[in-house]
Picture 1 (cartoon, rainbow, N blue to C red):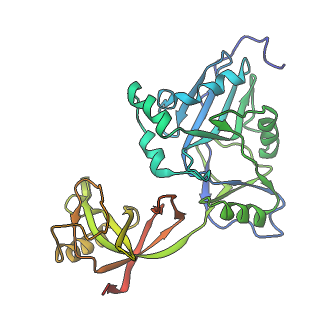
Picture 2 (picture 1 turned 135 degrees about the vertical axis):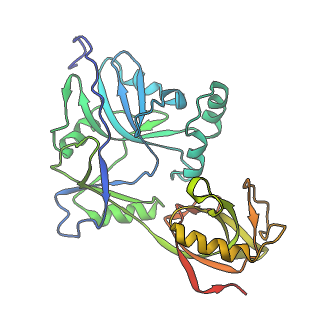
Picture 3 (picture 1 turned 90 degrees about the vertical axis):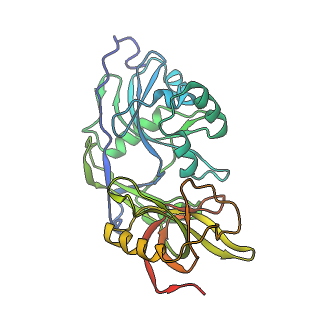
Length: 322
């Protein structure tokens, strides 16, 4: 096998290529593109060193090998071959969809005892979708389609890693498949594109499935830094037969000015107890009368009924819930 008899070279450090956000090529213009699931996890570059080991590096350059020990077997499976692989670490729910809330439990954890427990409670899975270096040869200038074929030829599949399928030249199929399985969206990649380390390139385009919902604000948590004294996160719910059901927190979206306005509204309607029907374990929560309705966009719902990737849009024009 190529590269097995050579002296192992030092693997090049490669920053992950990034996608732009925008419209995907339309039907009839998609023949030169490939389409993958947007796994929406923790972007990770895997360095298979050729001696049975693997080193994992996060998008910001942090070595996260100790955080995800269940991925050590990837290096063992790769054997004496050297490779630099691109992928995304996720924690899957019982339907095989990424669960961002459970993934956050793993982020930054290095304590061996806690890591060992989390590998059982929230095991990760590495979705591999690109190869940038293989057996002493850089593939950065190799077209995406050929890199994908090289990756498939490595036959990397294990208990905690895999090489998911992708769709070539059919945006409608890729979009429909992603929507059917409850993924957050898809990424389109130009078949002839080179790998551009560290660059956000129009050769990769990310598009998400988005839903808009009205949710009731039942509390808030003070922000940090420049947001001290202002709502950093909103605790929201939806009406249910047994009362107001908590569905998560909304942190992304509001400007500082909008947070200031929200702070004035919420400060005028405090209450001492939670307005939600069930327990809500959010440290520092400040409860309010559930009168204001916010409009948020989400990419779907988690298996336990929480908002997936909520983003603030505005207060509803009528603003109040009766």
